[in-house]
Length: 378
Image (cartoon, rainbow, N blue to C red; front, side):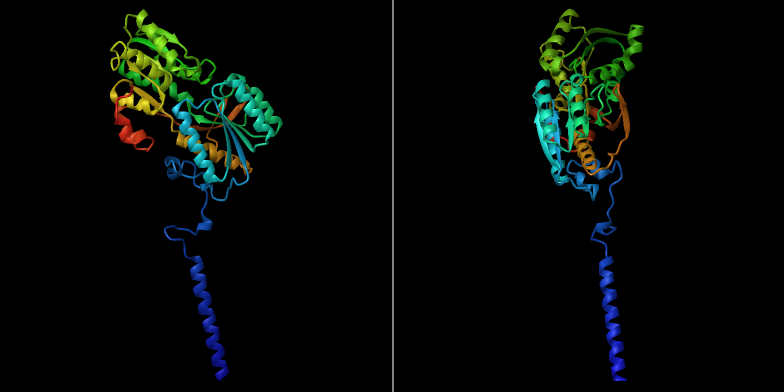
């Protein structure tokens, strides 16, 4: 009888211990509604991952970039936006465990071609390219395809080439945004068009957007285009010289200058300042550079189209992480480059003026408010 009682007590104790252990194993991690091992991948457009510059691409969960190398080729780093993008790419790649080999062509398409050949020889796991001259970049795409290396064009589409993916801004909207912003303020008057590099296929896309907005007014005679010039290599000095000439020819009678980016807008504003026309002539731009934001709050530049490079860089690393793990990136569009409908990951740009600077660029933490408002841009 005593032996039976001891056996029963022992059995009850074992069962209680087992139940307590099982309860601990099922307890969710503190602050989380599910066990950490059950955490799934974030949904596309997850606000935390999308809006935070510190969000890690490794939030993909089970994916890892360990042992994988991504080659990244940039056109030139003399532009603030490129430097920001490089820093974000390096940050996110590190968090994902990916090794980056980052090379700058310094504005030389031949140098970039050599860099691509070297990376292909190194057998990188993917090649990410912001082409210096998109029109001449097809050979590097062909070489990557022959080596079975995935090729991702970023921010600048490469025409007539069999690239695997494009990741960049929704460029079709950018030209429209610039033109619509100033057209709403000045639907009649003299307009000057200052484009970017002739070798950049995006320039025609932006200009098409301008004309979608102002084309009818031009045809009616409400808007007169009194100057139209390109800026080789997006050089602000060339933009300055062109605007100087157009102002002289038109006796300073210019109402709007559609400048295609913030760099050229800087050259435009410099020319206007020399004639005390800054703040009197509407000036567009794009990229959301700090100097442009300072010009906007000072009243010298009218607007910029902000292209959040933290988000773009995160999407590039997310795509690379999936590709090296044998998965497809999260595609949300396509762009025809003359050869194929290239699967694309597109980011929507944001028009920013003085009235919404605080609620967009500053609210996103892109620049500190004190930096934007600290001084009047030169």
